Image (tube, rainbow, N blue to C red):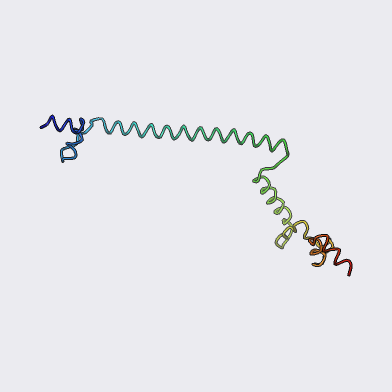
Length: 133
């Protein structure tokens, strides 16, 4: 009967003992193997982080070369300069600093009426009709 069971299960009698409620075989070196596996995973993770850190450093060098070539400032540098300018402007003032007026919003420019603005977007044939009246 034992022979028939082995043939039917294809040699899976070891697992069959566990399924039928038998005791599991304990590996004496299981704790050591698990510790080695965890150490290997930590080492792989450190290598991966180091690899990506090197890649990012190379990319940053390339970015800096492009910034130097075209005279572009980093975002942090721009923000630091703007903050320094605001502090410098407000040193002798007792009131809060004024907000900067965006270009195109100044009072020096002539204001167009709404009609002029709408007329810019009307096609040429319709413009001729308005001009004939």
